[in-house]
Length: 232
Image 1 (cartoon, rainbow, N blue to C red):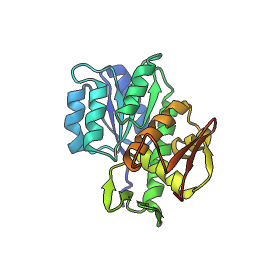
Image 2 (image 1 turned 180 degrees about the vertical axis):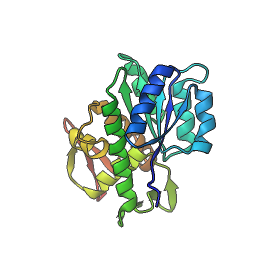
Image 3 (image 1 turned 60 degrees about the horizontal axis):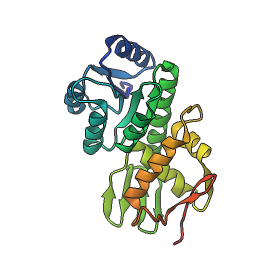
Image 4 (image 1 turned 30 degrees about the horizontal axis):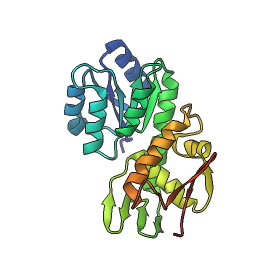
């Protein structure tokens, strides 16, 4: 039986950087395809069907932010990791707001890139292998099917959002520290900051809360993190 190798699409217009990323991902056991532009990346989404997209934001033609937005509009289950230039904090946050799951700043260590990808793939694979259905009020998390429902309406969550919701619903009433949640979802070797988590929490609230500006389920624990409110 052939071993399944997760597919990764590398979108980077600078060929030396693109080839460097591809060589390292191939060596780590992934199946990799390359795109040198946003237009090419969008054409490859249907034919290649990647599980992960490594996306440079500084692209000619269709920019990386627009590509990220289009990916998220069409595919909720693709993990998107954006690459940004050092110091461009606005691009990092905007990328996350548009649906990216994570970001890395150039130059970066390819071993860290591989570690981050493996961490999220382990987490999502664990979700599909589980056998539980978690229910809290009108929210139902079907772990083996990797689906979430509010009432009877399915909600499209990104891989990160699904993992965050699972962590919350598996720990009802517990005050979860930001660092604890980063380790659970992104992996213990994650070197990003807590802004990443806060953006994803805001996006998750927008999808599951009746009034995201006054959340009832995902409560902020000031100075610490967040808590899942089981009883309203």
